[in-house]
Length: 379
Ligand code: B12
Ligand code: SF4
Ligand code: SF4
Figure 1 (cartoon, protein in one colour):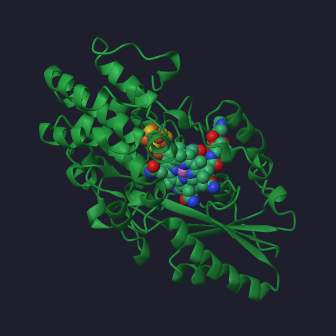
Figure 2 (cartoon, rainbow, N blue to C red):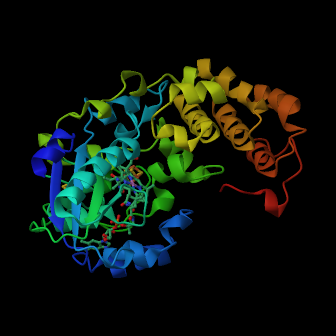
């Protein structure tokens, strides 16, 4: 089975039992009760099954956890200084892993099912399964203080998938924690998203804010987001265990060079068709043009680059209010007051959306009447 998985492009495979993660039955509800899942309500749906693989499929006797390496070719943090470019999380600079891994899981699952004569089900983010604790129980690695699964061989860069089997397969021993006294990932987080080691508050995480969060990005995080336009690799990139990691081996997971740090000036001009074509096949496509434009405008506001200011001003007329709101913020960071007054006269005075009006008000309180209570949105 291992040889077949390797041939399919997987870099790691281990087996555990569905009942090998008893702690998740307490830890998932605690995380949800704290509101650490932010607006990801789908984490609450079927939480009992998510926390307990035996409840998800009672017939299952074994869980095979697989990892595919999506390691970067260069240090992801180096690009954060290139303010006129947008940075994209390492995992997203390539084909959508759901697509690649799911196809290969189905192939391996079909082989196993034929050999054992018993059914299997394959999962890669498609069902309520907690892949990281299962991976640790199977010995694929351990959950670091940043909560991501980390292996001695591949560092943080394995993308995970699982096959649940009715057949009883021999299991592997679990991996233990090798973080020791290190806390580099916790200290590297720009938004202080870790209330404690091993716990993440998604409400403060740039990966959540730039990928999952709809609507305006809360003001407190905008500057800290810097030029990250999709996801964040900071806590992963600083981990010392990456010293043994290599770039992705599977050709379908090879990084696209043009996605390493695309110029903000190109991204801000993407219309719907241009967006779909540039990000075709990547996970970014699912986030949608408007949310990415919002992120690009935050990065433009953080760029300090006067050459990008006119691009931000052009977006004041975008059809999407979230894009317009982010454009107001970016203009506020790049234009002098006299020009902002002129832009307000041209675009702000007749702005119909309450959130965008609130952005204008935050910028030019004396030029307009205060917004009503329902119009203050993103503090
Ligand atoms: C929801 C989600 C997110 C959310 C929330 C992240 C999170 N940490 O929960 C957001 C949008 C923020 C996110 C971000 C990212 N994600 Co994500 N995400 C998921 C998803 C769908 C579910 C994760 C989950 O179940 N969370 C619920 C929490 C409660 O579970 P947990 O993180 O395991 O929490 C454990 C700890 O808190 C621990 N714990 C709690 N208290 C204590 C106390 C002590 C003492 C100890 C020891 C432990 C402990 O127990 C909990 C249960 O095991 C998984 C896919 C899947 N189906 O599993 C991908 C997944 C975790 N994501 C992945 C990736 C790549 C990322 C990013 C790196 C993307 C990026 N570069 O931008 C970032 C990483 C941010 C980070 N530091 O976590 C990969 C990680 C691969 C790996 N090697 O681990 C996964 C597995 C997807 C995949 N199929 O490969 N993600
Ligand atoms: S992904 Fe970025 S923002 Fe999120 S916890 Fe890690 S360092 Fe913090
Ligand atoms: S940076 Fe240090 S604390 Fe964080 S996951 Fe890596 S080894 Fe663990």
